[in-house]
Image (cartoon, rainbow, N blue to C red; front, side, top):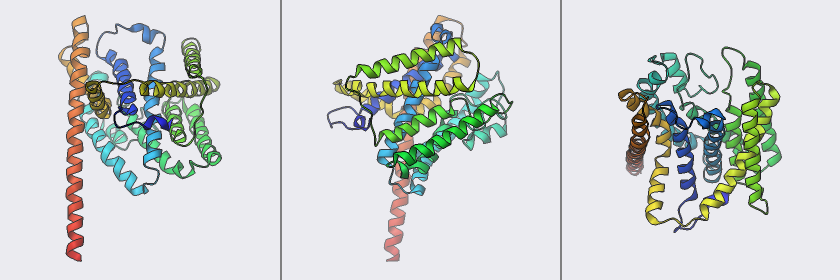
Length: 360
């Protein structure tokens, strides 16, 4: 799978295309919170569950893959500092904005308590879901991401020893699953429902940087992906009990079927020759993808407050005006944030250099 990261200078980075696809699926799934659902069949048959696992799981998978290739040799302190600057600052800004837009909109005018805000600011809401109030919609994702970063630090030195790596990973997943299943009926459960799924996506992304399972025929991946997701859809629609065997079966099917589809997707996006304008557009969209994820619900919540749902024109307003607004806002937010970080980094480096020269 690491071949997806190899491309010629004349080609478009395949990860840009995949990021753009995944964030587009997320936008499609979330817009119905703000307008009438004209694609209700997606929810009626739980297809939205399948799409969510593919889109969010894909993001975690490629995060694990990219980090294992480019950051395995980073010192822990450097890695933590890098992630805090690139991820946490934007997340904290999104958390503040969401407290006055997204949260009251999704919770009938109720604002988050201080304790709920602190829980999210500490990025532990996916370990203690809905402890003080409801979680912030979508922003749980960043909590999961930081826990995956801890997993990366813990497992990266074992990645070349597959027995040791899988033993540690299996132990962690079993402990998490037992805690989740044993508290799932409690008022306050430990770990969110999909915690183990996304942790496994990230961990298998790390493994994919070193190992690969390849079938001779590409259609084998399509068959595995289709059969696995079709079976999942049947389970979601007809098996409504929350038994341990359903949990394990769904865990297995989600991982296997979507890893097969992601492998197929990598081959597909690399086989296309994109015009220069399309390359530039996709690159910009991919650059903005993290901010799109962080801010799209806040923007839509503000828009829906101005024009409440109920008509076809409001649906057009949310989708066809809202999506470009979200993308442009996110792109310039990310652009100026990167510029600010780079400027501050340069100033800091120059000061350190001047201090060393003065000391010498």
